[in-house]
Every structure is written in C-alpha cells, then in structure tokens.
Length: 489
Ligand code: N01
Image (cartoon, rainbow, N blue to C red; front, side):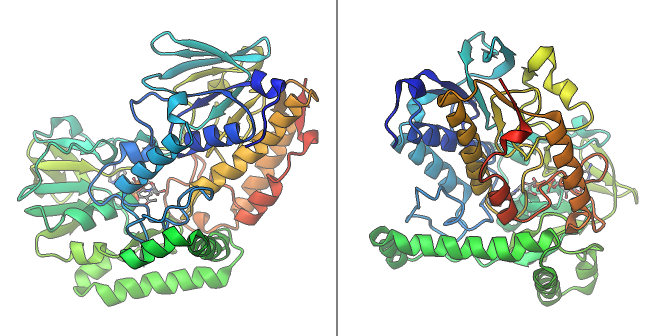
C-alpha cells in the first residue's frame, strides 16, 4: 500500500454498488493511499450479481482461476468453473480480508447524484447524504431483470419468478416446470434441475450454439499444491486468459477468423455428436453464426433436454393463462411453476439514479438516444465520475474483473493528477466522445455480433454496444489517459 499523503486523505470517493467492481474499487483506492471512501450498497449483503442470482445450476462459465482478483488467487475453488455460491463467498471473504466490509453503507440506495461547486452531492432513498470529490459507478450491467412482455403473464396461478429472483421456498420435486428462454442462465438451470422436476418444458425463441465445457472438480492434492505454490494458480490463470484473449475475444471482433472457425466446428460437433433424435437436433440447430450471441458453455444441457421428462417447445408463445403457457398452435402447456430466464435490461447502468452533471444536465438527457461513454469510462459533462463495466466496454465470454481493473487504473491516473494539483476536475470532451463513438460504431461492422442474430449485445439500432476491438487494444488505449481528450478545470 502507498503511504497516504495529507492530500490523498482529503480526496473523497463514493463507490456505488458493492459487487465485484465495487469491492475491487475499495481495495484499489486504499492501495493507492486514499482513505476517504465508502461503498453505498442498496442491499444488505455484498456480492452484486452473485448475491442476486441464486438459481439452481448457477456457476461462472469463465474458469475460476481467471474469474477472481489477480492479487487474491483462491486455492479453494472446487471446480474449474466454480458454482455461484462459492464465488459469492470468495468476494465476501476478500472484502473482509481487505477491510472493505467496514467501509460499506448497507441498505443505502443512492437516488440522486448532483455535481455542484466542484463536488458530487449524493442522496440516498432514506435521506442519507454525502458530499464527495469522485464517484465510482460500480452498478453492474446485468442487474435489472427484464420481464417478457407476454399477454397474461400476471394471470399465471402458480409461482412465477425471474431467474435473478429465484424463489427457493417453492418445491420443485415432481412439479411441472416451464422455463422461458435459452440464454446462458436458462441453459444452466435446465442442466441442473431437469432430473429433479416431474416435467420440464423449455420455451425456445432462438436456438443456441453450445460449446462443450467439461467442468472437473479440483482434487484435494491439486488444492494443496495451489496453497503451497500460488504460482501454479497464476500459471493456470495466465493460460486461461491467453486462450480467451487470443482465441475467443480476438475471434468475435473479426481479428482471428481461424479461431472463429474453430468455435463453429466445436459447437457444431457438440450438437451433431450429442443430440440423438434428429427432430430435436434440428430444433436445437441455430440458423446464425456461432458466437453471434453470447456463446453458451455447458457440459450437461444436451443431456438434460434429452431426458424423457423434458420437452423443448419451439412454437411461439401466444399467451400465459392461469394453468400454463398457450402457444400459437393452440396447445396449452400445463405448468405448476413458471421461470422467466429472459435476461436483463442492459441499458440502465447508473439509472434509475438521478444523475445531474454540469449546468443541470441529467444523465437521462445526455443518454437521450442511448447510453455511451468515452472509452467506456467517462461521460462528457459528468466530471470526476468513472463508469466500471459501463457502456461500450468489452463484453463476451471472459472476465469482467479484468475490464473493471483496467478502467479503474485509468481513472486512478486522472485522480492522481488532481492529487498533484494539476487540476481539480476532469471530464471527457464531447468531441473526444463523439470521435470515439464514430470509430467504435465503424469497427463494430467487423464483429461477429452483426452477423445476423438478436442479442443483448445490440443497441436499439442493431449496433453492438460493446468495445469492438481486442482486449489488448483496450489495455493499451486505457493504459494512460490522453489529457487532450479531457476538459479540465
Ligand atoms: O439472458 P439472455 P441470460 N419470449 O438475454 C428469451 C450472463 N451470464 O440471463 O434469444 C420468449 O442471454 C431470449 O430469446 P431470444 C451472460 O453474459 C453469465 O440467459 O432473444 N423468449 C433468450 O433466450 C449472459 O449473456 C453466466 O430470442 C424470450 C432469453 O430469454 C447474460 O448473463 C451465466 C422473451 C434471454 O437470454 C444474460 O443471460 C448466466 C419472450 N418474450 C448469465 N424475452 C456465466 O456463467 C426474452 N426471451 C458467467
């Protein structure tokens, strides 16, 4: 940890959100010598997405030795891809170990952030207030459940819940369970519960390419070796990150056609080799390029959906009735429990917090067309505020922890300029943001995300909202801020 100077101790920060990125922010701020910070967390527990998503089968399909902080390798991961509960426990333990928990204001839902007199004035739903120099927005992206707009949804007589709000009080044994959706979440749920329920009916609007993903448990010997020799974990992490960066993430942005062909071949072989019934196989065969939507990783989905008590329904949902789901053919699929694996509203970011920047301009106004951020981190007119995993950052099948880390280091360099007295405020210029956005939109045309599928990666124009270049470029560009792109005061 850097020794704090008086100036460092003067500067204050509000971190909004106590998930992976919020905890990371607190640790990094303290390591950089800053002591005046708090995490405002609306819930009563840390953990973000891993706290909210507790559905059966939840795991991180990013291997665990790379889905963890680089400074806190974890020898105890039970599997290559650890279950969600373990990940939640990991974040809570790291927060405790680094003295983060004591810096959290729990049950504090920030409702307003207003920039006035050079500082951010924060207000919580319950009236609590704070005034700080900087805001770190660590509010997550897959946070607000998206409920489907299907007629009759409220009429269903049995328990009905979104996967991010799983009701564990509802018994599933022997029940007729319906699940809407075929995203990463639904695939994990189906893989985990089909052998427990009486009947599983999955409503598929779009078929998915699925990458086989064996998920072996680590042996006690392996864990003992990790404890003795943390370098062994680091080597695994480096290997995994190398595979993702130079294989997958370069493939999806059009920089590695060979890797994309390998993904196509693997997912196709997975379907051909593992689904026996030709009718079901055709239902499961996507009509778009692999990796256009977020690639699904699974080692148990095909097996589950082929069980005798499982049915894949591809007929369009017409409406929901008290006793089940009626599809366009007129058939009523009678159900006891209905699960909505219908994803998230991905364009919210800091909202619904009312954020007021320079000259009374609100974030709603700045984002009237759609959310965007210069280099994924700064919004013009909203000084001294950084977005972690905000709009236009890298998304895909890799660790968002690294993304947040790079964004945070970038921000800390700007904060260091404030600490050194070079300026008090910084805000990306509208010109820089427009230039970045124009280049970004142009580059999206080379990505696999525009190859002809619907996905949450696309904005209202059908343009990918994500960083369309390699992770290496993200690291390079955010390696040091270009002060020419900032208005400072
Ligand atoms: O959500 P999704 P998710 N009628 O938006 C369908 C991360 N994640 O929760 O494809 C019928 O992907 C919709 O159909 P379609 C990961 O980044 C990570 O599964 O639009 N169907 C789709 O099938 C992931 O990408 C892990 O045609 C409707 C599904 O609902 C992200 O979370 C695990 C419908 C929504 O899929 C979101 O995944 C899980 C309607 N009206 C999730 N509305 C890891 O392991 C929607 N659908 C790291």
